[in-house]
Image: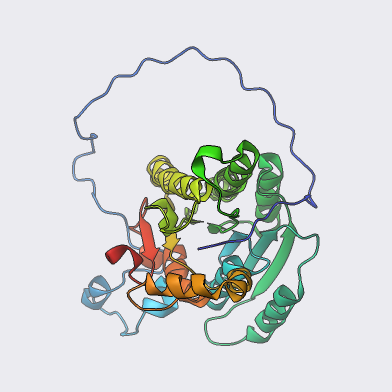
Length: 338
C-alpha cells in the first residue's frame, strides 16, 4: 500500500514552458446518438501485430499449433517502461517484474541522487537474467528526478523516448504517507506535501509516459498505484491526507482512460491493501500490535508481500489486458470483502 516518494533534484535539464494563450469559451452540444461508422466497418479492433490468437488462431487455415499466451500476450518483449518510486519497495518490485516479462529497458525514477545497495543488487540480478527464457536485452536504468516537478518529469520521458525510440509502460508507484493526525487540525503544509507527491506526482508521471506513447503512436499502458485507502477510510488511523490522495488517483485514472482511449493508451489502477515493504516492516517492528491488527483485517489472515502485486502489474502492462482501461484492480487479500 505504501510506495516511496520520488522527490528529487533531476539530473536532466528542465523544460521551458510558454504561457497558455487565452481562448474564447467554446460552446458545447451534446448528442446521445451513436457515432457514425462507414458501411461494413468492423466494430472490433484488429488482431495484434503477431496475428490471431486463441480460438481465432485455431480456426485459421494452415496455422501451426503453438501456445501464445506467454510468448505473445503476456510478453513485454522489446517494450520500454518508466517506473517511479522504483529505487526500492513496490516500485522496484514492479520494475523487476517488467524485465522478467521481457522488457528491454526499464527506467527507475526516484529520490536519491544514486540508488542504494538493494537496487544495485537487483540490477546485478537483472544482468544475470539475460539469455534466460523470455528475457531479452534486460536493462535496468536509474534516473534521479522529482515527480512533483512537472517540467522535469516531462524531460525524463522525452529523454527516454529519444534514446529508446518508444515508450510502452508507465507505472506511477511513488507515494508518501504522513503520521496519524486528526482531520480537524490537520496541518495544511503536511496535507499539501502528500497531495504534491501522491496526486501531482502521479499525474506528471502519467503525462511523461503518455506523451511519449502519443509521440510514437504505438499505444501503451499507464498503471497508477492507488490503495484500499482510496475506497474507504482505514480503521484505527487518521489518514485524511493519504486517503484523499488515493481517492483522487482512482478518479484521475478513469478520466485519463476516457480521454486517451482512442489513442490506444490504457490507464488503470492497482489498489493494494497493507503490503509489508521494508519501510512498512521497520514501522511494524516498533509497533507489533499494529501488524497483528492489519493482518486480521484481511480474510487471508496476513499482510501482503510486494511480489504479490507482480502478476497484476505485468498483466496490465501487457497485451493480455488490451481491452481493459479505466479500471481498478484491488489486490487486497480480501480486505474489501468484509
